[in-house]
Length: 326
Ligand SMILES: [Zn+2]
Image (cartoon, rainbow, N blue to C red; front, top):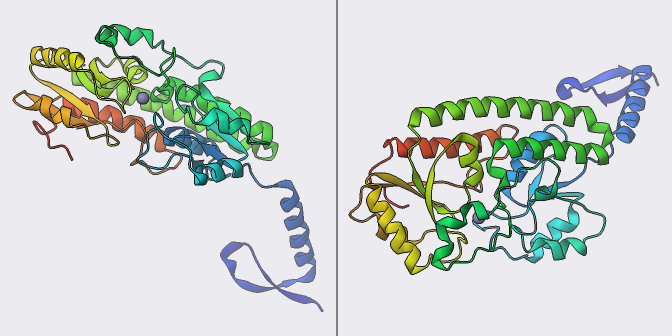
């Protein structure tokens, strides 16, 4: 027989192909099958880390995220479905034991999985929690974030370090796709430069007015772009702020005359609504977990841009006065 039925790669059209060409095709397919062993299954603990990982693995593999939408890493506890995701992964990227307190125990019993805690990697910038102490400690609240602020993913400087580490780890387990990871990393680093120049300009134009945030998560973002967080309501988003801390916040809000308070989509505390009553305060939303951002190669930049846009538009007064909490 001289001719075989087969698919040609371009256009998926059925065509007659001479046997010699078919043999070459089969040979090439065999070679590429052995060369591209399954890419590693990558799992990130929280969505923002997934967005950075997705930028690095684009074109090689899709990454997964452990925490389901609506759950806070501060209070999450492992479910059987999470355990399955962990067991199924080859590589796990997470923040650190002071953030995902539910993870370390599970990881010790998960064999053959490479786990990387981003708070421990070389070059990561860690803010001391003490830098914020003076805001709150006199009010008798105890933070449970450990010695360092664990919200490390909220600065592009740290995102660069995280992406480099992810690329290094992925190349170490998947040499075949080394050039892909490297190329993706270069693109990501370039996009971070654009993100920074865009956001520095936005913040500059906004007049850098001080604002209030729901929980103490934005220190890295503040540092990165020279924003001014005047105060936060709580260190632990699961807990009500203490009565004395609320009184002191009320005093600060009265003095601030016109300002913005940012709540978060994962939490709907009634006290924020009460605090805005009778005051010239706009309420904005900041989502430190990127829940409404679709995972894709550009997503991390979109996430950071959205945070900066929400802050700058609110402090410039563009948001509705006393905007309804939704
Ligand atoms: Zn937090």
